[in-house]
Amino acid sequence: MKGKVELILKSIGAAFLISLGNFALLKLGSPIGPVIFAFGLLGVCYLGQNLFTGKCGFFIEDKIPALDLLIILVVNLVSGYLFGLLYRVADMSVIPAAMEKVASWEFSLPFFLKAFLCGTIMYIAVKMYREKTPLGILFGIPLFIFCGFQHCIANVVTLGVVKTMDWSLLLAVLGNFVGSLFFWYISRTTIFPKKTK
Image 1 (cartoon, rainbow, N blue to C red):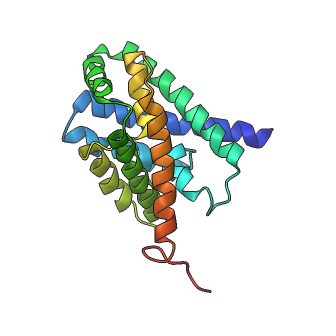
Image 2: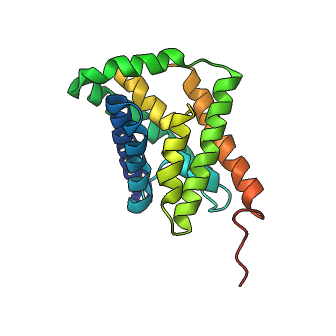
């Protein structure tokens, strides 16, 4: 029971950190917002929080129980949405930017592919952090934002700001998951070879 409570609390913490980055993105826009957003993932990694998009690429490698990954996802989504509602109340100036973003989303193959590509970047960024460099985060986060790739937890925060829901969120979750696992698979013996004893 204690383990599940810690899992949930760290999932809320991760959603909060990503929501701060997303709030900065909505508030500041380009080019500053995408750079500041990296604070969110840096915080997640350095503080050991549970972020779905940072965990799903390691689902097999770290032998993460499927139930735990599902809990992380659900808690990230619910708390991320609630934090979005909080930002809506705290600063209404971010609502127009959030509405513009949501209006551009659609339940389509291109949207899925953008989420897939975001998943690959998230895996690479976290893997590089595990290899003792934050450069993957510092460059990877602005990269996926400038390219218009889709991050499901950031998206749910934006949906909270707008106080709505959109089916594209399902594609973002699936795309992030598949993209992360795809790059984990192809990188096992290429970019990040297993260390020999």
